[in-house]
Image 1 (tube, rainbow, N blue to C red):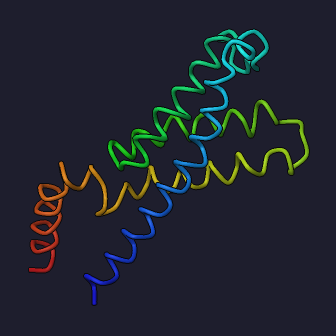
Image 2 (cartoon, helix red, strand yellow):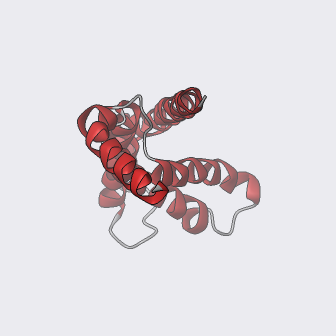
Amino acid sequence: MLKNKETLVSTGLLLLRVAFGCFMLVHGWQKLSGFSEMADKFPDPIGMGSSLSLVMAIAAEVGCSLLLIAGFGTRFAAIPLAFTMIVASFVVHGSDPWQKKELAACYLAVYATLVLTGAGRFSVDQCLWGRKHAEVADSSTSASLT
């Protein structure tokens, strides 16, 4: 029964990662495609300059989204995405009505969740490090049960 629950949770995390990774990838791709038009007028909410702010947003929205989809370095990849959504929601759209902040807040909730949960079983993370982490978790669980 526990194995089935773990499979369902991992399947849910896979769907979450792939869906929101693809959704955000579209936003990043639009920025990348329109870089030359946007570079001078992109919002500079934390004082890095418009071009660098745009580069950082593209790096998070394209690069980290691809990592999220693959489930590679998931917790670390979700951090820049979450930070980007914090800036979008509370700084760029800080004085706007909720309807303008809502999408960024939804993305933030997903990325914060992935920082806490990790990628799940169906990921590159699991293929690379899962067995080692599972053995450590099993041994600590066994020790606490005795």
